[in-house]
Length: 390
Image: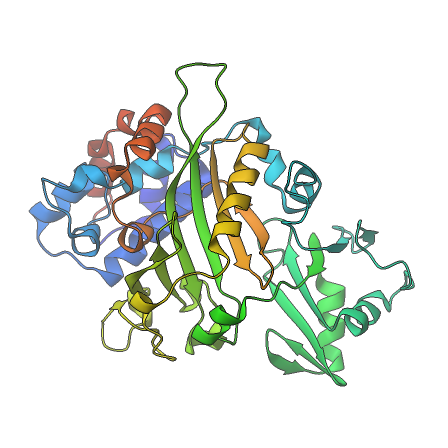
């Protein structure tokens, strides 16, 4: 049995950032629960190469193919991969940064920001005809009918993302009917929150799953440059779509029971299968060729408006090219796309099943190796792990 608290200390001693070390150890625990490996030699083989042991089953790792996958230990040790321009990715700041060079329309309208003391700062798209008082939120909801409210960073007290909708006289929080007391609780509890336009997904995506918006995760990495004066070029490392399911209220993120299906970055065509986290599978089948509820078949479908969306992604990358590594979260709309946020160090584990081994791409492999992927020794991870067995 692993003493995970002690392992956290050991991983910190190896130089991993505290926040990321906590996440790294938690994900290891999740892996050991989902994909237990009893064989000590197999476990050692994986750990010494920087992988959680369950990746042997998840990725189908062998001596001949493991080099094509980004290992867990090395990936977490690379944090941070972006420089001081990381501050651009703050959700509020990003709205101002992406305000030129063809990026003006990629962000949703921003109405207000709730400060840490609960006061309101009214942002650039705030309606001028709504009074700035304690009724602002309900009046804004009355005008817009639906709002997206999200933490500017972190989880802000556990409220998380909130979809607030007005239907007639009824108010819904994430599709659940709430009373006036709950509305007031939400209004008065928000801190470090942004209140924005709610982006509606394209109708073709709603046919796959209608109860929550499909969000794309596209990870872009900047190609290393030999000529310091040449324009920046970017490569796609990961591209997949996340759809909600009937599990846990229909949220699309995989950690809440959603499914993810990889797609080709050039064409927008889906791969033939999707995946879901094993803990959400009633029969242990975590790879599916259809949506588990609507039975939409992936191999017959692709993303709408993809050419337009791909061009916008490239515009964004060129515009903020002082950064190196971007995990874009995108909603495809009827007329184009809206960017929800950009993550600076997104997950890259199940993604390597949905989208294939990440390091098979020469450009992506060069990016990670240029960042120092190979300088971290998985044997250090294995030694720390062994020392924490009870």
